[in-house]
Length: 382
Image (cartoon, rainbow, N blue to C red; front, side):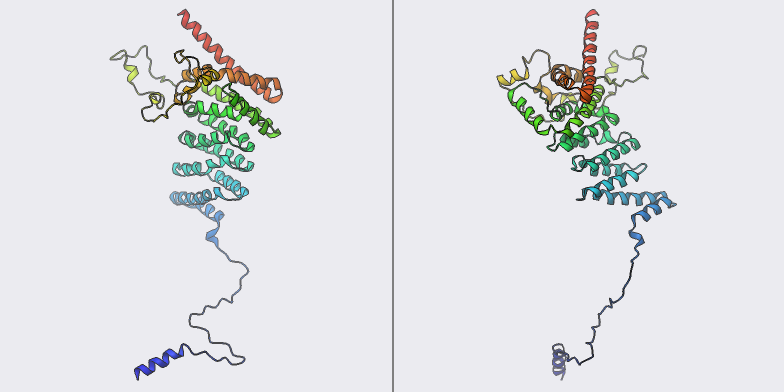
């Protein structure tokens, strides 16, 4: 009897129900009615504006800070959006809602927005300049901490294949010159100068290959927008040379070296250094790449001369440390002075705004040579 009852129960699952005219089929037990209609759906918890206002009016400071952090974190994820207008609006939103003091959040902001230096949209790059300036004003020393990643993208922009990105590269460099000049000139003086030569289509050597490459590059990118940007490039170059060659070394004014009582005459040499990374020139923690053997023709084109003449040469640029101002001055005099003077004189002959800026930049170099010559005269008289 039990087996017969089970068979009949199983057969019911395969029996097709016969529908009668005017009657609908029976609805299943798990049926959900979705026949409702609504004109609007209110989701107050999904509104970014209300969350910001609630965070600002909250009585607990910890709750408001965490809420703001969540909002900016969400906005930072939109910096990679495919729409340029969205990226611009995101940068503007971040600028208007920068935290008062949150180092970890500022680190995320810099890491997420710095790659936009190479953005193809001019509006995005302009807004990024405004954002980085505001971050530097609110957090002094922020650009010094992240200068390695920032200068990497700036050098990439200075040598970029698109002229529009190259035109904006010096604007980002101006931010570092204003807010982080010491870190810039001490660690990236040589690389920035070499990138500038590529940006302006100048050459350090006189060999035919470099000259032909410069002519081809300048003829390719010599449109009206690049010509307008050249005057700004030369103006920023003048500021960079001033910050690199005439910045005063920081000294401890609290110590009078003449009247202080020391246990040993050489005690000052063993105090804590006043400069960052004072032993960089020793290359203790870096692995240098093997230097390429220079042929005789390359030596003639680079004016290298003998290796014992006491001067720096182009082949030495990859191994030099520019922590002190005397080394930077010697690099300019030995390597960059002649090509800089030559190219700046060519810009002066063109006239116009770029000629005025080139004349001011040439004045900086003349001031440097005059100061070095006067120092040598003083040493000889002594």
